[in-house]
Length: 391
Image (cartoon, rainbow, N blue to C red):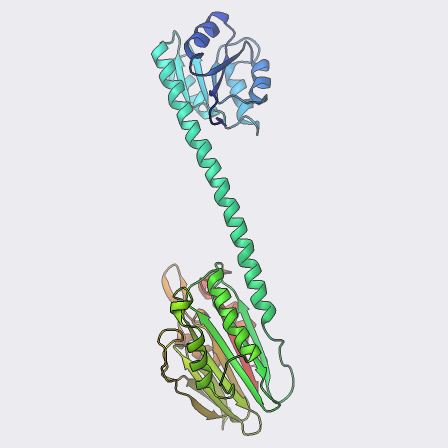
C-alpha cells in the first residue's frame, strides 16, 4: 500500500544488469527503486516490508522464469495484490495471453522506450493508489456495518427482553411471535393484567426502521407497562390513545409517528373494549353453531398517533363468545413481497387464520408459511403478532 508522503516503491526483476541500470536511472527521481537479478531473490523482496507497490518483471531469466515468479506471487497472500508489468522481448500473442492469465497487468516490450516505461509505471501506480484507497474505505464501511449490525441486534434483544411471558392457563391464554426484520423495525407488543379482571392487550408499530424507530417503540411500550400516563384510565382504550398522542408528538420525536391497537378484556363480563389508531384491524374469530366460525375485524376510525394534537379518539366494544381467538398484528405480517411483487396480503392472512384453528397456537406455522411465500428466511418488515385465546 502506498503510504502518504512516501515515494512508491518499484521492484525491478531482470537478470541483465544493464537493463536494471537503465530502468533504475529512469525511475529513481520519482520512485524508490530496488532490484533483484533472479526469481528467487524477487520472491523474497516482494514480501519484505515495506512491500513494493509495483513490480517490473523480466520473463526470460535462467532458473525460475518470469511466468513462474508471477504465478507464485499471485498465490502469495502478502504479494498477490502487487501489480506486475512484464518487461520482455517476447512479442507473440500467446505469450501476452499467458501473462495476463497469470495476473500481469501490462507488458513493456524490449528494447523499451523510456517515455513508455514512465507512462506505464505512472498509470499503474495511480491505479494501485485508487485500489488501496478503495480497500481502506471498504474496510471502514465494513467496520461501520459490523458495529451497526451489532447495535441493531442489541436493540432487537432489548425489545424481546421487554416482551411478556406466555399465559398458558386461566381465563385467558396469550402468546406472541416477534421476528425483527434485517434492518430492525419499530414494532413492540405486550399484554398485562390491569387488575384481577382486566387484561390490557396492545401492539405498536413506529414508522420507519432502525435503532431510532425501535427505541421510540420501546419508549411507548414502557409507558404502557408502567401505566405512566397522567389522568388516564388504562381500562379506557380511547384515553390511552389520546394520552400517548399528547406525550409523543412527532414534532418532538424526529418526525416519528406510530400506529397502535389497544384493547382491554374483562373476564367477568367477557367484554372486549378496544381502539385503534391508524393500525390494521385485529381479527376476532369465534365459534358458531354447526362447527363453523365467524371472523370479525376490530378497528376504529382513528388517525395514527403523534400527528395531530388535541384530537379525540373513538372506541368500540364486543362481547366475546366461548372458544374465541383474537389476533393483533402489524402490517409486516401480511404485506409480503417476493421478486414478482405482492404475494400475501390482508385477505390472505384473514383466510389463513379463519381456517387454521387446530386447538393450539398457529403462529409458528404462520411464520413458516409467510417465509415460504416470500421465498426468504427474513422479511423486509418486522413480523409481529399476538394471539389471545379465550375458552
